[in-house]
Image (cartoon, rainbow, N blue to C red; front, side):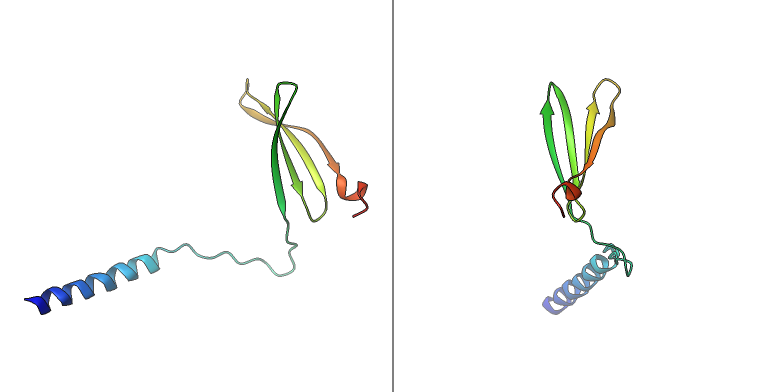
Length: 88
């Protein structure tokens, strides 16, 4: 009886391990020659309006996005190339 239970547990563990292995998401591979970007996001509030600032750090590009709560939309408020301004 003990041998039968042990065998059943081993088979169950193998099936569970196989199920977990087969359900793993495929890994993404970067295309050769594509640039690597590093993004940062900061939320802010100015004059009662909420903003999201996104910066691409390798080139120094910044975009400000304003939240429009009335229409439930995001709108571009402006952009700048701070990398050029800082001599990057």
